[in-house]
Image 1 (cartoon, rainbow, N blue to C red):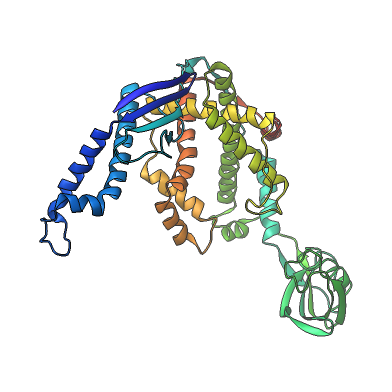
Image 2: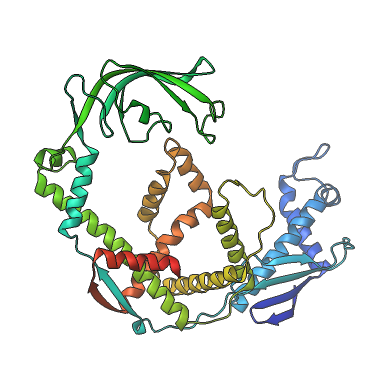
Length: 444
């Protein structure tokens, strides 16, 4: 195999591989001889089929395999010898493909962009702030009040009392559209909290002022965007029977409430809430520190970027943002989306940082363990209730899906590694100050 360089411009590489016809013919003969002992053909004993007949019967297929093997081997040897790491799958085109015939040399043009050499960076020069937010008593109290509200009880009002917003009424109801009862429009002993907006707009308002044993007709219209198309925008009448009216009972924040949420007593519940809040604060603070770390790396380290990776990333960013702005459009049934300069700038940053973190992680031998991957798959599977098994099987068979789950774990481990070497100053801040820092992330 003869190799000639045709391009060496920045990260772009081009080579012409020439496979002499004699070498290709020899490779075909070798493959046929290797297969000959096992070949059976009508009129011949196993292993006794003449080479000429083998060539006629299997020659074209074997020729294609030999050609592909020779090209793959030559490219593999070239990459090992040159040390190039293609940024994407190399493009391979047969130079004389249209007019090629058996007996001609095979000439192939190979082009690719190689990954750049990543410069060393002194991680000890990075300066980071680790924000710490203690769970203040007011935040714990607010969380307790929300828990109490979520487990709120109701008690019967005095006989003859009218229902108010916030009350829970128990009703039987049956709905009609165009005079006909419709499926799903009927229930008995349904507990409804007035003002909860859990029913069709206007339904609950018409039950304010009702008393136990009242029979009412509620007139409403289904929203135009209602989930059931046959009801969307339709006027409806509900025949309602009020069976009880209950007032909200002031929730008690005590040991009994704590036991409802799995704690031994109120102090135990407060401790759980404190730990949960501080874990949430720590997660948010980590995102702030990570952004600062990435910003500093982006400023400190510059190198050439493969255009193909930047273009692919910019296209993906543009596509994702377009769908966020047009959520009603599903799939790819839309016009081409051209990336803007802003998209390209963001893509350059992502590609640069991605390559840099990969290099740092590789040199430090950072790996993602099987246990970490299993946990990631389990977390992702929760997004598909009832389809967990199918999701597991999909991930097992799909390398791309595995990489999507592995990549953020690897990145976080590399970020932790960098933070260990950087200068980190701990700073205690308030919840409000942390929230402002998190909001600022979206503004950048």
